[in-house]
Amino acid sequence: MTERTVTTRRVAPTQLAQQLRDALTRLNRRVRQARPVGDLTVTQLSALTSLRLAGALTPRELADVERVQPPTMTRIVAKLEERGLVRRTPHPTDGRQVILAATEGGQAVLDQFERARDEWLASRLADLTEEERDTLRHAAEILQRLARG
View 1: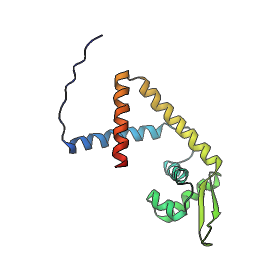
View 2 (view 1 turned 180 degrees about the vertical axis):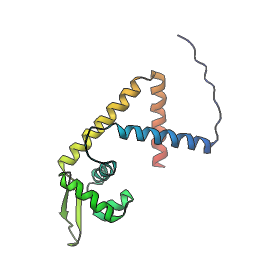
View 3 (view 1 turned 180 degrees about the horizontal axis):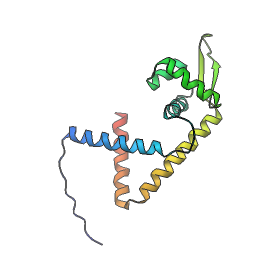
View 4 (view 1 turned 135 degrees about the horizontal axis):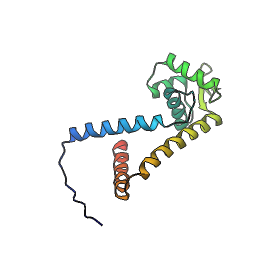
């Protein structure tokens, strides 16, 4: 077994922030591309994911979460509804509103997309050394802590 020399280079927080942002953006983009063949857009998938995470939202709440204008969200929801991935139910207290939720079919589609992404990433991680995977495990813990803080 060969001994590996580790050199620590000090990096300013602003430089590290740029490097991390760039790496995470590129990795996220690549993971998003690893999806089953289908005609759902990234925006539609994102809206469906938000509904899964929230349980149910009004169209306005969903537009706010997704940071799009309500008319844009109306079009997104219409496409998801056409495919049977989202359902509307009456709002319990406001007759003018509806509540949106992912259907079982919508949940299944999200599961399929997540499996494809996880498989792609797992295959890339398998190419790394045990030490590199361990480093990434530690980095993931730190990144989760940063995201919560």
